Image (cartoon, rainbow, N blue to C red):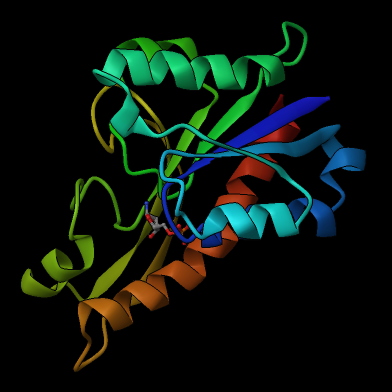
Length: 197
Ligand code: GRF
């Protein structure tokens, strides 16, 4: 069976959308795939409870307890290893995971490491995307699912959704409108990838 390992740092709403879609659309039957584990770098991430409530195994690897990025990423890779089978390499899905991964980690999971970013890449990589889109006077905003490469918020684009920027929008209102689309395109992009494996 192909294992999907989801990395989170916070509320985990994308993780929950993926796990719910996996169940609703029977990814086990369709693709021989399952959401096997959710890993957070923050013990207080509320997404951990969401995952446990859905019967998904969880792990916390607190980045603050490691001396550097390499040591943290090695611990992360060790945690993923039991789900990463030679005949069925794991899919590693970043969903609001607020850590920059080392080139070694990215290379190891190359082609099966995905991220969702709340902008229409290549516009606005990095943080504060919604405020930056408002400040730039954008009429459209959105989200992008992409392959992860060593360069932050780059990599092959797998899916995008655009939403209108409305008069009087705040970063929070725009973020909520974008997030509701993230919950649709991320599971769909993962299903497409599983179909092609
Ligand atoms: C999303 O907006 C995602 O695009 C960004 O971080 C947020 C995570 O939200 N990378 P959640 O934890 O999935 O609710």
